[in-house]
Image 1 (cartoon, rainbow, N blue to C red):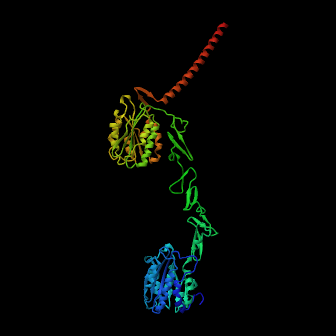
Image 2: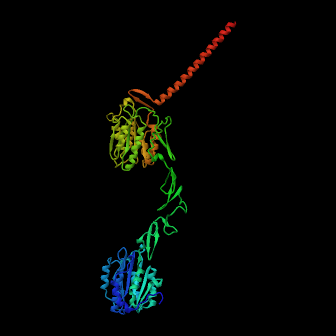
Image 3: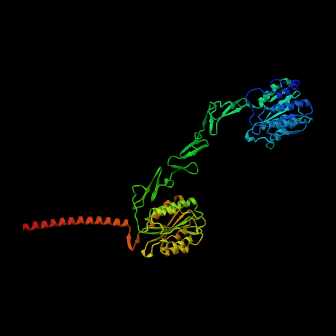
Length: 583
């Protein structure tokens, strides 16, 4: 019969045992790879004891040629007659010796031949994950080998078709009296590869080798990569090349090329689409940054991204930045600092919010902001004195007005301040400032010297205590109050803390990282127009310089007019003399 393998039964009984024990042919080791294999064995009464023993030895011999293991071939065995019995499921054993022991202990059922029932059991139970089959997503082949010697007593075509539709590959092995039509109805296509009929056992060795060749493949990739760029993958009797994720196989079926995800479009990227192994990514041109949407680009604000060192104001200009000075002050040669206009002397106390809502990284930004204020002040014992108070649920003087005499010392002390966390007791901080911070014991100059006293409150939220009493008391004591709010600071509270007019004494920034723009307002406001030192009135040197310059120009013009008048007087006298002589 064409397409079928046929051998006489008599010779099988003589040759099977030697075939089990003889040495396997030389050659590359056979690897099945990951495979779930279930043997469905006919143990009906038509199978005589010595024939069942032959079938048992056939299974043992075939097991010895397979690469058995939990990560390789998993084997399960069921037997059937009028009922179905699981000998051992797919997940029971990982060692070949345990499987052989279970097969040798197998006792035939010796009843009818319900092959269709056995196929249904294999489909619904034996190949279930509960029995040890691997999940379908792992794409491990499922193979059923049905060995029978007669005609089924139930229908097999429909249930076998259902099993094949679920991805089970079926091999049908008939011995002696097996019905060929039933074998063909059960087996997977092509039938010439999946149907075996044994009529003579003198060719059992050849039959075993051919059957073995259907179930396993020689690992040709073990001999080398065969020119594959990335991976060599074995398949039955052959191999093929596979590329890593993000690559595609070329026409030569060996080389790999990175997938160009941007070839079909720029994927809504505002500037450039870049293909990566993980897919398309958007990239911005130089001088721009990618926004959180992953597509839109924005001009990079270098003033917030680098330590620009500008004393007054930094202006970002795409790929670079420049420093600006306030009106009336010129940029120095270093391109960063401004010629100082030292506008008198001040006692300045800074009240800094150290509550939990500020957070450590933002507290560091606050300290840098404070030091930028220090940079534009003339810090000295005779000039501007600075004190710092931190508050949260309590108040702590970090350093008083009289402790440091230079800007460098103040800035170093500011950076050493440790974050307090906890609550926001702004009212308590204002009271501490009024009662202690501006006392002569803390370094404030006597009121008789008329040195302006300035308080600057920095906060990011609503106070947890009342501020009205001590905010009013501070202004009654002659302290000029400034309020700087960030984030969730309450405008009503800021205005209550600050002196009038609020437009000059209240500043606000929605974010800690962008609060440097507040310096412009503070620089123009904190320095007083007048100051007193050692009992002598001092006016702005910048104003004095302007007055001297104006006075010089005026005196020069008057001198020129005087000279012209003298010349005119001389000419008049000369004319008078000439007229007198003519008379």
